[in-house]
Length: 334
Ligand code: TYM
Image (cartoon, rainbow, N blue to C red; front, side, top):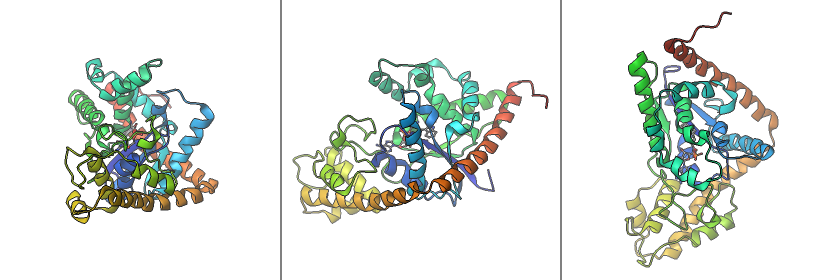
């Protein structure tokens, strides 16, 4: 607990262009949670170097992501927004937790298998131990809840196992976190292949709506979305394309699939796709405008970066001191 509130942690990588999946599955939910929870949101830049990055471009993207957090409506005075690399405790705890994680567990991680297949020329040890760094992120803040999309659930389950293992050896050191999945948008699929998640790294640009896409592009991508020949707007497994568009429409308008089925009863796919496109535009346009304004305000962002890194560092160090003591490291003499 911090300030009598439960603690919440989540993070996002700054690699690639953020998609509607990142927004509906994560960012959108993050904006509303700070009344109930003490929230920490990191730009997961340490995770990003598991894939080669061009330094100048990488630095720019990280800054853009932090700005986007604020543009999406996460108030930096009420939430702690910071770069993971600014708090050295993440890397330190990650090493310690590596020694409490089994290779058998890491071998089972589906995201590692996917990424290793995608980057066959660079299957580095960081890619392999990536979920341990995620565990360190979460446990460092003694997080009670972690809002994520469904693709991250396996990593969260591993985090819980590591925390429980550590606690069973050393006593109650870590809070065991729970996932927090939003009502809708937890798994936004590709518009071109609705059996695959919408992803920043998809080679087919028409499969993903990017947060900075202009209205015409958004509408074009929605109109081209792969559907089926059933011809009715129904939320069912046999119609994965339509099901995905319904999910998107629900998440943008806070509706249930049943309400959407009713609204489009008797209407064709053309009308429905247009309505989906309009909804997405109406969600993303204000975010894009705020982002443009904020990008001009360098001093403001710099202040947020500095203050929030100090705050995150304070809580991270508290946990790290405790962990080091429990493990039996000799205390530094000051
Ligand atoms: P990342 O950067 O890939 O994704 C950030 C968040 O967006 C969600 N997401 C989606 N949700 C719904 N539909 C989609 N198509 C979709 N694509 C992405 C993800 O579930 C995630 O919540 N390793 C993490 C970042 C991370 C992290 C952490 C997350 C580092 N440390 C600690 C939680 C806790 C990642 O690469 O997410």
